[in-house]
Image 1: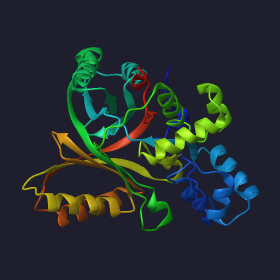
Image 2: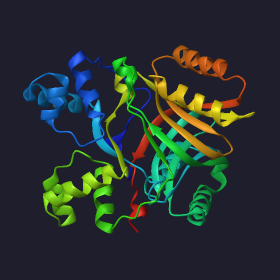
Image 3: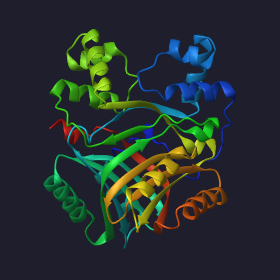
Length: 339
């Protein structure tokens, strides 16, 4: 099966919860960056030697807490259409469920797929080149699922905010990156090859990237720098297996009414400023906003959700939440965008 288990960020039911000490936390914090960062820079930020950084990084990887490093790519600025789809299945068994998961993992335009519990069974994020292709992708999904698809809901992403995991560090001052359609950029095939590689492994050495792109390391470095300056690459993030730290991953969809721009912006800011919220997405479709939240207990989740509902009771009409059970694919530049 084509699942990308090595990039799994959550898997419910894992035992052996690991506690991070302050040095580990500082090292992880340093990995949330707006540029490619080396061990010397991590050492400076964490205030420990490079040897300690190397040892700690190896341990975090060995214990399957740090499962990779990725570049956050602004697909919207490249003119691609991004979407979220939830599926509810029926007449299903474990074998058929895995067939459906594997189908989506191997789809060229799928950026992320996870199983969930709650209102829906499968969560999918896609990038496509235009609305027609988006429609074709949805039809292909439906045809493959066949009688196993009970219902679906989809929305198009307008803006995305990816936030560092402040709940681990108990700090404020999020590094916030906004992705929205503005000044569409044109990139060449070599840029795409670089984006494809670093979207799943941003720590790949320049020498390796040079071999794969048939450029010099200096030329690769220059291109990454320009892609970052032009806000096509917006961040470099570590992939943390939060299940190993005792956290659970919930998605929440908000249905809004009586909305005006001021209250919408206040709500988005409130969500971005919360240390447990790691992604905020503005959508057009059946629901208006979506956010991802990491918590240790269901009580903590309920308290966070209640605080949001109380603060914005005038514009929140309804909500849906899902517990992400396990993810199987995660990239910000799926293979289909290379075509």
